[in-house]
Length: 229
Length: 229
Image (cartoon, rainbow over all chains, first blue to last red):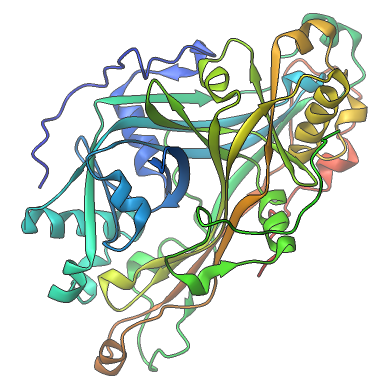
């Protein structure tokens, strides 16, 4: 398990939102909700002196974000002990405004910055992998074969503390200029966007008679969680 | 317009995919398809010596990705003339495997690295903003008020060349170990995920009698484009 203690969301000067301050949220529960509702994060690392951003899976345990990757992955190796950043973003709608510069999106976004620590304790490494699998596919870990010794040896686990994190949320309709509203004649509004699970597709090599697990079946036709709307 | 010439997708050593090579695509049309299907990208910049990743809107014109932001935004100012990276990722499904380490996702992902050039030509700046608005909301630019001189002065436009780009695509079902398949008894398959537009919500301050534009109405109940499946 993580050795990090639970702390409130306390933006440092680096993570204090300076643009669109009305969209910044400081409640820790909102940070957790945005992080927990995501399937992937985007990870930024500095590689050869230049930033690179990559999509990757993750999980959260208390104040710790866990990431994992192959021990052979250069991007992950570059992150060990280095400053990194992750973002989890949900796009909830597109805002059609009366003027080009007021087009916008409704979204929930969490950005975390900090040092990526290599997790070396074998119990924490296994727990981190459980957290990552359960994050994306709740209820799956106890149903499937756990990692083998060989798989564990080929896997790197990184921990990122949530001490430096910020959350931004935009909801509602367009915020047009008064002159444009008064002029009228232009449609303005929101086109909502949501992610929806489809029907499960059994693997081509699945033997007959295996039921879709409840945790999978329950997701079908359900939208991704939208805790903040 | 961009002064960049059109070049084929030619990975440099920095963008050549070294992990999961079977998931890398080198066709330029696939890069464009992944980029064009996205609503937002994640932008990585180095700020105060450390990377930060942020969601932002974008548009593509030929070999150029355009980004924009407020002239007062520190993240955008830090990007001027500096190396940056953007990623556009679509999650198309969750892969339930028979073992924890084979859980995966079906996805389409484009990663671009390069130097962000400040666009200073006023015609190109305006064209870039048109490209960005039309990317997210096709058919909208000519329908709404264009940027004012004041809005243009407050807006920074950056151009990123697509010369260093890579595309990764995963499709299909689980790739389980033979022993796990032979052991049987565990459900495995894909749970597809898609983004769907909902019904338009007119702005609370919209006057009566304004029809939803065809370009907005056409999107309703349609999934986001999935060009590569």
